[in-house]
Length: 346
Image 1 (cartoon, rainbow, N blue to C red):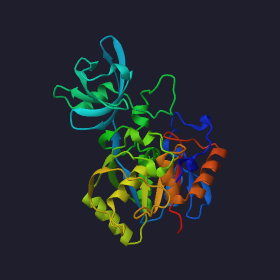
Image 2: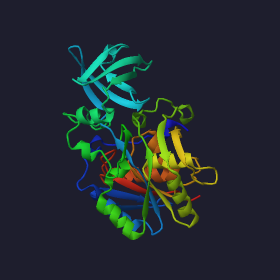
Image 3: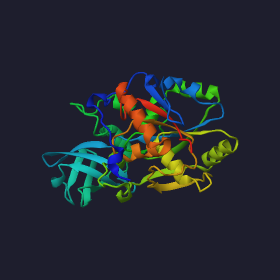
Image 4: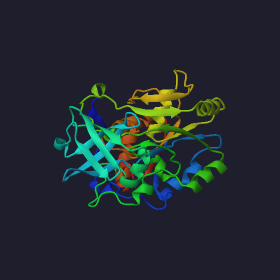
Protein backbone atom coordinates (compact mmCIF):
# COMPACT_ATOMS: atom_id res chain seq x y z
CA UNK A 1 0.00 0.00 0.00
CA UNK A 2 1.12 3.58 -0.58
CA UNK A 3 2.41 5.19 2.59
CA UNK A 4 0.71 8.51 1.74
CA UNK A 5 -2.67 6.79 2.17
CA UNK A 6 -1.98 6.96 5.92
CA UNK A 7 -1.40 10.71 6.03
CA UNK A 8 -3.63 13.20 7.84
CA UNK A 9 -3.50 16.81 9.02
CA UNK A 10 -2.88 17.49 12.69
CA UNK A 11 -2.64 20.96 14.25
CA UNK A 12 0.56 21.22 16.27
CA UNK A 13 -1.43 22.69 19.17
CA UNK A 14 -3.05 19.27 19.73
CA UNK A 15 0.27 17.52 20.46
CA UNK A 16 0.32 17.01 24.23
CA UNK A 17 3.54 18.02 25.99
CA UNK A 18 2.38 16.97 29.46
CA UNK A 19 -0.17 14.40 30.66
CA UNK A 20 -3.50 15.21 32.27
CA UNK A 21 -3.89 14.71 36.01
CA UNK A 22 -5.05 12.31 37.23
CA UNK A 23 -4.01 9.85 34.53
CA UNK A 24 -7.45 8.31 34.05
CA UNK A 25 -9.02 11.73 33.40
CA UNK A 26 -7.83 11.44 29.79
CA UNK A 27 -10.53 11.32 27.14
CA UNK A 28 -11.34 8.06 25.40
CA UNK A 29 -12.63 7.73 21.84
CA UNK A 30 -14.53 4.44 21.40
CA UNK A 31 -14.68 2.93 17.90
CA UNK A 32 -16.92 -0.13 17.58
CA UNK A 33 -16.65 -2.93 15.04
CA UNK A 34 -18.83 -1.03 12.54
CA UNK A 35 -16.92 2.23 12.86
CA UNK A 36 -19.40 4.03 15.13
CA UNK A 37 -17.88 6.56 17.52
CA UNK A 38 -18.50 7.44 21.17
CA UNK A 39 -16.80 10.03 23.37
CA UNK A 40 -15.96 8.76 26.84
CA UNK A 41 -13.44 9.23 29.64
CA UNK A 42 -10.69 6.72 30.33
CA UNK A 43 -12.12 6.17 33.80
CA UNK A 44 -15.27 4.81 32.06
CA UNK A 45 -13.27 1.77 30.92
CA UNK A 46 -14.73 -0.71 33.46
CA UNK A 47 -18.22 0.01 32.12
CA UNK A 48 -17.04 -0.53 28.53
CA UNK A 49 -15.58 -3.99 29.15
CA UNK A 50 -17.38 -7.18 30.21
CA UNK A 51 -16.77 -9.67 33.02
CA UNK A 52 -14.56 -12.41 31.62
CA UNK A 53 -12.58 -10.06 29.39
CA UNK A 54 -8.81 -10.24 29.85
CA UNK A 55 -6.67 -7.11 29.80
CA UNK A 56 -3.11 -7.71 28.55
CA UNK A 57 -0.59 -5.00 29.47
CA UNK A 58 3.05 -4.43 28.59
CA UNK A 59 5.05 -4.19 31.84
CA UNK A 60 8.32 -2.99 30.31
CA UNK A 61 10.04 -0.22 32.25
CA UNK A 62 11.50 2.82 30.51
CA UNK A 63 15.10 3.45 31.44
CA UNK A 64 16.53 7.00 31.65
CA UNK A 65 18.32 6.44 28.36
CA UNK A 66 19.26 10.01 27.47
CA UNK A 67 22.73 10.94 28.73
CA UNK A 68 24.79 14.11 28.69
CA UNK A 69 28.55 13.74 28.86
CA UNK A 70 31.83 15.25 27.80
CA UNK A 71 34.44 14.38 25.20
CA UNK A 72 37.44 16.38 26.31
CA UNK A 73 36.06 19.92 26.67
CA UNK A 74 33.09 19.36 24.37
CA UNK A 75 29.54 18.45 25.34
CA UNK A 76 28.04 15.20 23.98
CA UNK A 77 24.46 13.91 24.07
CA UNK A 78 23.70 10.20 23.75
CA UNK A 79 20.41 8.32 23.57
CA UNK A 80 20.59 4.56 24.07
CA UNK A 81 18.57 2.54 21.56
CA UNK A 82 19.17 -1.21 21.86
CA UNK A 83 21.10 -3.35 24.35
CA UNK A 84 23.55 -5.77 22.72
CA UNK A 85 24.80 -7.32 25.97
CA UNK A 86 25.42 -6.19 29.56
CA UNK A 87 28.07 -3.66 28.51
CA UNK A 88 27.33 -2.73 24.89
CA UNK A 89 24.47 -0.58 23.54
CA UNK A 90 23.55 0.70 20.12
CA UNK A 91 22.96 4.43 20.50
CA UNK A 92 22.40 7.75 18.77
CA UNK A 93 24.77 10.59 19.56
CA UNK A 94 25.37 14.23 18.76
CA UNK A 95 27.39 15.90 17.54
CA UNK A 96 27.82 12.75 15.49
CA UNK A 97 30.93 13.89 13.61
CA UNK A 98 32.91 13.88 16.87
CA UNK A 99 31.89 10.39 17.95
CA UNK A 100 34.39 8.22 16.11
CA UNK A 101 35.62 4.77 17.18
CA UNK A 102 37.92 5.07 20.18
CA UNK A 103 36.22 8.19 21.53
CA UNK A 104 35.81 8.12 25.30
CA UNK A 105 32.77 9.85 26.80
CA UNK A 106 32.58 10.77 30.48
CA UNK A 107 29.10 11.00 31.97
CA UNK A 108 30.22 11.06 35.62
CA UNK A 109 33.36 10.33 37.62
CA UNK A 110 32.46 6.62 37.83
CA UNK A 111 30.51 6.39 34.57
CA UNK A 112 32.24 6.32 31.17
CA UNK A 113 31.79 4.71 27.77
CA UNK A 114 33.88 4.24 24.64
CA UNK A 115 32.66 4.35 21.04
CA UNK A 116 33.67 1.01 19.51
CA UNK A 117 31.86 1.22 16.20
CA UNK A 118 30.03 3.71 13.99
CA UNK A 119 27.36 2.73 11.46
CA UNK A 120 26.58 4.08 8.01
CA UNK A 121 23.60 6.12 9.28
CA UNK A 122 25.53 7.63 12.17
CA UNK A 123 24.45 5.22 14.90
CA UNK A 124 27.19 4.19 17.32
CA UNK A 125 27.94 1.22 19.54
CA UNK A 126 29.07 2.12 23.05
CA UNK A 127 31.02 -0.05 25.46
CA UNK A 128 30.29 1.02 29.05
CA UNK A 129 32.78 0.81 31.88
CA UNK A 130 30.50 0.42 34.90
CA UNK A 131 33.21 -0.79 37.29
CA UNK A 132 30.97 -3.56 38.60
CA UNK A 133 28.00 -1.29 39.26
CA UNK A 134 24.81 -2.25 37.36
CA UNK A 135 24.33 -0.01 34.34
CA UNK A 136 20.65 0.47 35.18
CA UNK A 137 21.67 2.06 38.51
CA UNK A 138 24.02 4.47 36.75
CA UNK A 139 21.30 5.41 34.27
CA UNK A 140 18.90 6.06 37.13
CA UNK A 141 21.48 8.33 38.73
CA UNK A 142 22.64 10.25 35.67
CA UNK A 143 20.17 9.74 32.80
CA UNK A 144 17.01 11.55 31.69
CA UNK A 145 13.84 10.08 30.27
CA UNK A 146 14.04 9.78 26.47
CA UNK A 147 10.95 11.78 25.53
CA UNK A 148 9.72 11.44 21.93
CA UNK A 149 11.03 14.00 19.42
CA UNK A 150 7.58 15.53 18.93
CA UNK A 151 7.38 16.63 22.59
CA UNK A 152 9.05 19.99 22.15
CA UNK A 153 9.88 21.84 25.35
CA UNK A 154 12.34 24.65 25.71
CA UNK A 155 14.02 22.99 28.69
CA UNK A 156 13.58 19.35 27.62
CA UNK A 157 12.66 16.59 30.10
CA UNK A 158 11.78 17.62 33.63
CA UNK A 159 11.83 15.62 36.88
CA UNK A 160 8.12 14.82 36.64
CA UNK A 161 8.77 12.77 33.50
CA UNK A 162 10.44 10.10 35.65
CA UNK A 163 6.95 9.24 36.88
CA UNK A 164 4.73 10.56 34.08
CA UNK A 165 6.49 8.64 31.29
CA UNK A 166 6.18 5.32 33.12
CA UNK A 167 3.19 3.02 33.55
CA UNK A 168 2.05 2.23 37.10
CA UNK A 169 2.76 -1.46 36.45
CA UNK A 170 6.22 -1.04 34.87
CA UNK A 171 8.51 -3.81 36.13
CA UNK A 172 11.26 -4.92 33.72
CA UNK A 173 13.84 -2.25 32.67
CA UNK A 174 14.77 -2.18 29.00
CA UNK A 175 12.50 0.17 27.04
CA UNK A 176 13.70 3.48 25.65
CA UNK A 177 10.15 4.61 24.85
CA UNK A 178 6.99 4.11 26.88
CA UNK A 179 4.10 1.83 25.92
CA UNK A 180 1.98 4.96 26.03
CA UNK A 181 -1.52 3.47 25.98
CA UNK A 182 -0.76 2.18 29.47
CA UNK A 183 0.06 5.62 30.85
CA UNK A 184 -3.65 6.25 31.52
CA UNK A 185 -4.01 3.48 34.09
CA UNK A 186 -4.04 4.12 37.83
CA UNK A 187 -4.05 1.64 40.68
CA UNK A 188 -7.66 2.60 41.42
CA UNK A 189 -8.72 1.98 37.81
CA UNK A 190 -7.08 -1.45 37.80
CA UNK A 191 -8.90 -2.27 41.05
CA UNK A 192 -12.23 -1.23 39.53
CA UNK A 193 -11.55 -3.39 36.48
CA UNK A 194 -10.85 -6.36 38.76
CA UNK A 195 -14.10 -5.73 40.63
CA UNK A 196 -15.88 -5.72 37.26
CA UNK A 197 -14.48 -9.19 36.58
CA UNK A 198 -11.81 -8.04 34.11
CA UNK A 199 -8.51 -9.73 34.97
CA UNK A 200 -5.09 -8.53 33.93
CA UNK A 201 -2.11 -10.43 32.49
CA UNK A 202 1.34 -9.04 31.79
CA UNK A 203 3.68 -9.44 28.85
CA UNK A 204 6.97 -7.62 28.23
CA UNK A 205 8.07 -5.88 25.04
CA UNK A 206 10.99 -3.48 25.32
CA UNK A 207 9.98 -0.57 23.12
CA UNK A 208 12.79 0.90 21.03
CA UNK A 209 13.29 4.29 19.40
CA UNK A 210 12.43 2.62 16.11
CA UNK A 211 8.80 3.17 17.08
CA UNK A 212 9.34 6.85 16.14
CA UNK A 213 11.32 6.10 12.99
CA UNK A 214 9.77 7.88 9.99
CA UNK A 215 8.73 5.84 6.99
CA UNK A 216 11.33 6.38 4.28
CA UNK A 217 9.69 4.06 1.79
CA UNK A 218 6.84 5.15 -0.47
CA UNK A 219 5.20 1.72 -0.31
CA UNK A 220 4.65 -0.37 2.82
CA UNK A 221 6.13 -3.41 1.06
CA UNK A 222 9.52 -1.68 0.99
CA UNK A 223 9.65 -0.77 4.70
CA UNK A 224 12.00 -2.71 6.99
CA UNK A 225 10.42 -2.94 10.44
CA UNK A 226 12.58 -2.48 13.53
CA UNK A 227 12.94 -5.48 15.86
CA UNK A 228 12.12 -5.39 19.56
CA UNK A 229 12.67 -7.97 22.29
CA UNK A 230 9.61 -9.45 23.96
CA UNK A 231 8.47 -12.22 26.29
CA UNK A 232 5.20 -14.05 26.89
CA UNK A 233 5.43 -16.51 29.77
CA UNK A 234 3.95 -19.99 29.66
CA UNK A 235 1.50 -19.06 32.41
CA UNK A 236 0.30 -15.97 30.55
CA UNK A 237 -0.04 -17.86 27.27
CA UNK A 238 -2.12 -20.55 28.99
CA UNK A 239 -4.35 -17.94 30.64
CA UNK A 240 -4.98 -16.16 27.33
CA UNK A 241 -5.89 -19.44 25.64
CA UNK A 242 -8.27 -20.37 28.46
CA UNK A 243 -10.07 -17.03 28.26
CA UNK A 244 -10.45 -17.31 24.49
CA UNK A 245 -11.78 -20.85 24.76
CA UNK A 246 -14.36 -19.74 27.34
CA UNK A 247 -15.65 -16.92 25.11
CA UNK A 248 -13.89 -14.02 26.81
CA UNK A 249 -12.30 -11.23 24.83
CA UNK A 250 -8.60 -10.37 24.76
CA UNK A 251 -8.11 -6.61 25.26
CA UNK A 252 -4.55 -5.60 24.43
CA UNK A 253 -3.24 -2.38 25.93
CA UNK A 254 -1.14 -0.71 23.26
CA UNK A 255 0.23 -1.59 19.86
CA UNK A 256 3.23 -3.19 21.60
CA UNK A 257 1.02 -5.78 23.32
CA UNK A 258 -0.82 -6.41 20.05
CA UNK A 259 2.39 -7.00 18.11
CA UNK A 260 3.78 -9.33 20.76
CA UNK A 261 0.61 -11.41 21.13
CA UNK A 262 0.22 -11.76 17.38
CA UNK A 263 3.90 -12.81 17.15
CA UNK A 264 3.38 -15.49 19.80
CA UNK A 265 0.26 -17.01 18.19
CA UNK A 266 -0.01 -19.77 15.63
CA UNK A 267 -2.41 -19.84 12.69
CA UNK A 268 -5.45 -20.87 14.77
CA UNK A 269 -4.84 -18.18 17.39
CA UNK A 270 -3.30 -20.37 20.08
CA UNK A 271 -0.73 -18.33 22.01
CA UNK A 272 2.56 -20.06 22.85
CA UNK A 273 5.35 -19.03 25.23
CA UNK A 274 7.61 -16.58 23.43
CA UNK A 275 10.97 -15.02 24.12
CA UNK A 276 13.03 -13.22 21.52
CA UNK A 277 12.81 -10.47 18.94
CA UNK A 278 9.79 -9.64 16.84
CA UNK A 279 9.74 -7.43 13.77
CA UNK A 280 6.11 -8.08 12.84
CA UNK A 281 4.71 -5.32 10.59
CA UNK A 282 0.91 -5.17 10.62
CA UNK A 283 -0.88 -3.32 7.82
CA UNK A 284 -4.45 -3.43 6.44
CA UNK A 285 -5.29 -6.92 5.24
CA UNK A 286 -3.67 -8.62 8.23
CA UNK A 287 -5.85 -11.34 9.83
CA UNK A 288 -5.68 -10.84 13.60
CA UNK A 289 -5.44 -14.14 15.46
CA UNK A 290 -5.68 -13.22 19.14
CA UNK A 291 -6.71 -9.66 19.94
CA UNK A 292 -10.40 -8.70 20.02
CA UNK A 293 -10.14 -5.15 21.34
CA UNK A 294 -7.25 -2.80 21.85
CA UNK A 295 -6.50 0.38 23.73
CA UNK A 296 -4.25 2.86 21.99
CA UNK A 297 -3.17 6.47 21.96
CA UNK A 298 -3.37 8.59 18.82
CA UNK A 299 -0.42 8.04 16.47
CA UNK A 300 1.66 10.00 14.00
CA UNK A 301 0.60 10.33 10.34
CA UNK A 302 2.20 7.75 8.02
CA UNK A 303 3.55 5.79 10.99
CA UNK A 304 3.64 2.02 11.36
CA UNK A 305 1.46 2.40 14.47
CA UNK A 306 -1.29 4.24 12.60
CA UNK A 307 -1.11 1.51 9.97
CA UNK A 308 -1.64 -1.10 12.70
CA UNK A 309 -4.79 0.55 14.09
CA UNK A 310 -6.11 0.96 10.53
CA UNK A 311 -5.57 -2.77 10.03
CA UNK A 312 -7.42 -3.47 13.28
CA UNK A 313 -10.48 -1.24 12.97
CA UNK A 314 -10.46 -0.40 9.26
CA UNK A 315 -8.87 2.53 7.47
CA UNK A 316 -12.14 4.38 6.87
CA UNK A 317 -13.16 4.05 10.53
CA UNK A 318 -9.77 5.24 11.82
CA UNK A 319 -9.54 8.18 9.44
CA UNK A 320 -13.04 9.21 10.50
CA UNK A 321 -12.12 8.69 14.16
CA UNK A 322 -8.94 10.76 13.91
CA UNK A 323 -10.79 13.50 12.03
CA UNK A 324 -13.41 13.59 14.78
CA UNK A 325 -10.68 13.64 17.43
CA UNK A 326 -9.09 16.67 15.78
CA UNK A 327 -12.46 18.42 15.54
CA UNK A 328 -13.16 17.71 19.22
CA UNK A 329 -9.69 18.87 20.28
CA UNK A 330 -8.45 15.55 21.62
CA UNK A 331 -4.84 15.55 22.79
CA UNK A 332 -2.48 13.51 20.56
CA UNK A 333 0.56 11.24 20.91
CA UNK A 334 2.40 9.92 23.98
CA UNK A 335 0.96 12.22 26.64
CA UNK A 336 -2.38 12.55 24.86
CA UNK A 337 -5.79 10.90 25.04
CA UNK A 338 -6.72 7.33 24.15
CA UNK A 339 -8.91 5.10 21.99
CA UNK A 340 -10.77 1.87 22.71
CA UNK A 341 -10.97 0.01 19.42
CA UNK A 342 -12.96 -3.05 18.43
CA UNK A 343 -11.65 -5.34 15.73
CA UNK A 344 -13.60 -4.55 12.59
CA UNK A 345 -16.41 -6.86 11.57
CA UNK A 346 -15.54 -9.23 8.74
